Length: 441
Image 1 (cartoon, helix red, strand yellow):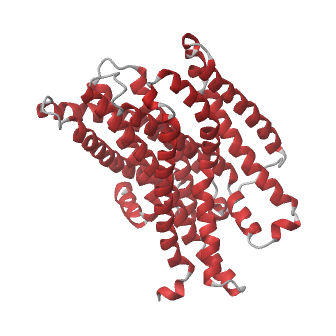
Image 2 (tube, rainbow, N blue to C red):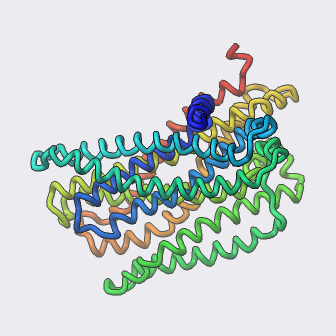
Image 3 (spheres, one colour):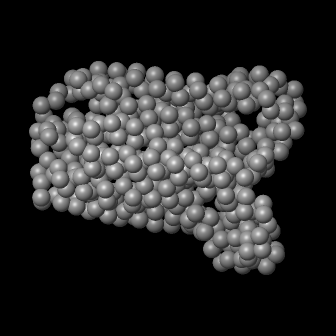
C-alpha cells in the first residue's frame, strides 16, 4: 500500500520534485564520473575521492533544503492525512518511501548519464577495450551507491526528525511561515566574522603568491577553511542586514517596489544564506575547473602525455559546465515555482493598479536578484585573488602564457554571461504565464 500510494503521490506532485530530481541526477552523474576516474587511476588517492565527498556534502545541504520545500508544498495534504486518522509514523514512512523511490530513480539515471559521459571520452581511444565496460560500470555504480546511501540516510534522518515534531496546526500553516530571529542585531557579529575570515583568506593567497615554493603547501592546505567561512559569514551578514533594515521601517524602503522585493528576499533568509553559500561554492568550483581544464589543454604545459592531458582538460571543462548547469537550473526552477506560487499576489497587485508590464518588471527584478546573489561573494573572491595568483603563475609558466589567468577569467566571465542570459530568458518567458493568467484563456 505504501509503495502504490508513494508512486501515485510522486506522479501527482512531480512539479514539486523537479528541484530534487535535477539536483540528485546531475550531482550523482558527476559522482559517477569521479568514481570511474578513481577506478581507472588506481594510483590516485584522496585527490580523486575528495570530489565525490565534496559533492556529497553539497548534495546533503541541497537535498535537505529541497525536502523542506516539498514539505511546505504538501503540508496541507499531510495535515488532511492526519485528520483522516493516519498515524504520524505511517505518514513519515509514506513520505520517506516516496522520497527514497524518486531518489533511487535519480540514482539510476545519474549513474547512467555519468558513465555515458565518461565512456564517451575513455572508450573512444582504441587502446581501451570495451570488455572492461561492464566491470567498470558495475564497480562505479557500487561506489556511487555508497555515496547515495550516505546522502539519503542523513537527509532521511533529518526529515524524519522534523516530521515527528510537526503538529496538524503547524502543517496547515507551514507553507506560509516566514523565518525570523530573536535578535535582529546578530548580523553585526556575522559582519565582523566575515571581515576576519576574508582577511585570513587574502593572507593565505598572499602567502601562495609571495612565499618561496617550499612553503606554499602551508597556505594552500588551509585556504579552504577561511574561504568557506567567509562565504557563509558574508551571506549571513548580508541577509541579516536586509532583514534588520526591513524591521527598522525606514521611509526609503517604502519607495517604489523596494519593500516588496526586500520582504520577498528576507522572508526565508536563514535558508537563503545557506543556499547562497552552497551555490557560491559551486560557482567557485566551476571557475577553478574551467581554468584548470584550459590550462591542461595548453601545449606549453607538458605535465602528462598528450592523450592524458587532453582527456584531463576536457574532463575539467565538462565538470565546469555540469556545475554551471546545476547552478542556473536549480535557481531557475526555484524561481519558476516561486512565480507560480505568487500568482495570487500578482492578481491582488493588479487590482491595486499595477499593470501587467509593471508586474513583469517586478518579477524580472526578483529573478535577476536570485540568479545574481550567489555570484556576489564569488566575484569578490575572484577579483581580489586572481591578480595575486596571476603574478605567481607568470613566474612559473613560460613567457607565452603570461597573464593567462586574466584571459581565462575573462573567458569564464563570457560563459557566465551566456548562461545567465539564456536561463534568465527562459524563466522570464515561463513566468509570464502566471503574471497574466487572463491572457492565456
